[in-house]
Image (cartoon, rainbow, N blue to C red; front, side, top):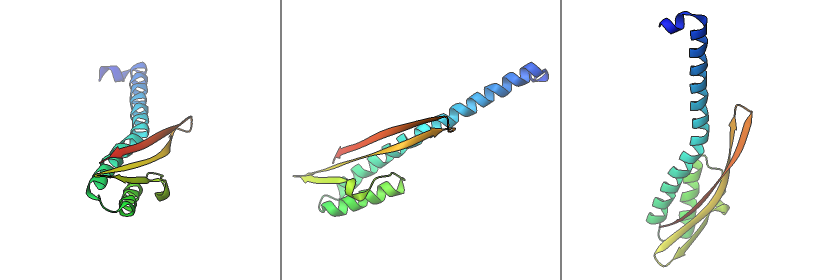
Amino acid sequence: MKVLRNQQGFIKALLTMAFMAATVYVGIQFGRPYYQYETFKTEAKEIARIELGDVEKTRAKIYESAQSFNIPVKEKDILVTKKANLVQVKTAWSAEVDIFGLYQRTLHFTLDIEA
């Protein structure tokens, strides 16, 4: 508390908290698309494992999963192929990350799984 009593200590603490808040914000903005990718990948793998029969049904369920994670992919862009006892799923999309309107970055994701 002694540090905050003078003006210089208060400004230093305020700048430190602002820096920490900005760091958390940037981490969330970049982390969200990667989290969506990983969870969608896991769920798509489970769907492909369960739905071994119908390719169209598998594509529809994977598309529903993508919509639930707000992943901008169209159903026609999801390629589902069946080889013997394996189901292969391929798709790709991009996500835009915007940091305070000052920095924009496009992240590209590719899903290529076999189950």
